[in-house]
Length: 239
Image (cartoon, rainbow, N blue to C red; front, side, top):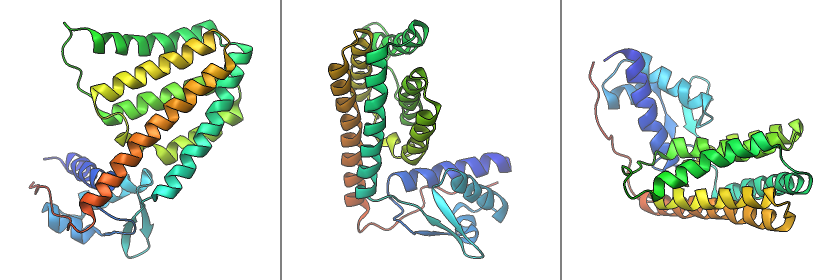
């Protein structure tokens, strides 16, 4: 197996452990330990740690390896509160002043297509990739912010979204949740189209709280599951 593929595979395994709380905050990761667990040289282990650091999943400690970054439930609650405040302003502006037809239609048609596919009894079962869904959900909300035409607001929302990105992987994890998210997004868009400010804000509030609730439940379950469980290697790689 090529070293780049080894690095990516190790990175993906460690990333999942971090996201789903198998590793607690400040858990120590070193090249030596990773090399030993996965039966690889230090080079792919070092690259995997670099990739984790780029995604803000670990922080590098000079000459000591890396430690895991884990926001606690209170911090996540605060981030979601900031996100909701920013996005409430976005939908208020769009519902009050209107949204360009091409922007509205592009976002609407994308989510309508997903909903139609999920509801089609003759369509093949939709496999939900939680990371892809997190990206798609982020694009929806950032797309609304761009449509509002406030670049500073877009930058602020992107900063918040970057803090939440890997946490949101726990949100849309099933076809049922994806269908509910589609319904909520389309409802927000409908109220924006109808210039119904209060209804648009209420629909947005419901959507953000729904996502936060899913994430909070998943995090609590993960914390409970791994509270007293030692981390075990999931597999060994050879090359």
